[in-house]
Image (cartoon, rainbow, N blue to C red; front, side):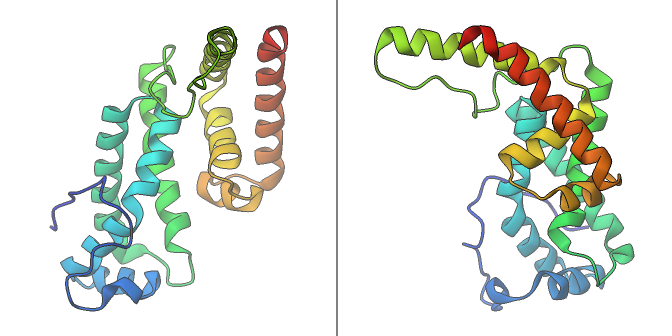
Amino acid sequence: MTPVSGLTDAPGTRDSGGGLAEVDDRLLAARAADGDDEAFEHLVHRYAPRMLTLATRILGDRTEAEDAVQEAFVAAWRALPGFRADSQFPTWLYRIVTNKCLNLLRARRPNAPLEDAGELRAPAGDPADAAEATETLRTLGQALDSLTDEQRACWVLREMDGLSYEEIGRILGIGEPSVRGRIHRARKALMEAVRPCT
């Protein structure tokens, strides 16, 4: 098996001389499924930063996110022979990473804070404004913690990663109406939680 390393390397910057930087994901996946370690390593470098950001946003803990992404890439490596060529590789990978994160959240509930997510930081500037923003972000973090794991994943994929309802449905293996419902309930809960602070 190929080692999975360098999760924090910048995407698209590594090319070992084989011209893989321009190779299509599907071709790389097919080559990796046939045992080409270099092709899989290139996919890791291409998608690890994005997957690490996703996992950190869902889990709220960078170290745990790194472990989750590492495990997800190992699972992807093992599952590559079953990857369908008509699928989008990033969507398939999003599904593996998201499911890994959801399993970790379910195992550690009820406490799944987002304090270390790196996305919820008060702006620098006026101390009074910064204190108010910090309180709002703390309240938002608590509200995110109160969401169900599935609502949280849907909200992160939609609001922070900008994926469509259709893509989220494919990633989570649910219908688009279920995605819309979970995101609607998540938004409502977050708005209600933050309203007193604004």
